[in-house]
Length: 194
Image (cartoon, rainbow, N blue to C red; front, side, top):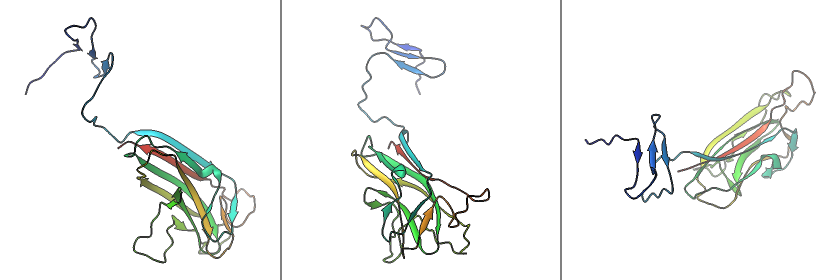
């Protein structure tokens, strides 16, 4: 194996060094750098968009409805090969079946493959023990592959199957007391290079 050991490279017709390597393995290129092959080393975070919804919010909607503009986020990928890492949480409760999920435009990121009746959702927020102080936490961590360089909209959506009040960011019981929680709904998008 051959090894070239140097700290500078200069073109024979140049008057200054074109490439400089220092003792810390940093490389400085003077002028333009053209690469004809593929630069290896994807997986970099290219941009981050995030939102937090802290208001106590309720719905009796029986079909998917937007939670709030605070957790409706726009992102424009730099490349069709980019992935979007979607992470967030929504905490709430309902006396009957209630659901929440994150959508990209009109596409639900949760799928119910192999099922014709199950609800594609982060979770069911039914308060199973029917205690008024209980909240249920739903978390999403998913890598989406939109294959697009157009602006995309990601958002939390929710609904109550039977129209029973579904409340998020607090328990069913509404006493403003030191022993009650007030969680926040969050959504974060990270574009990851391929």
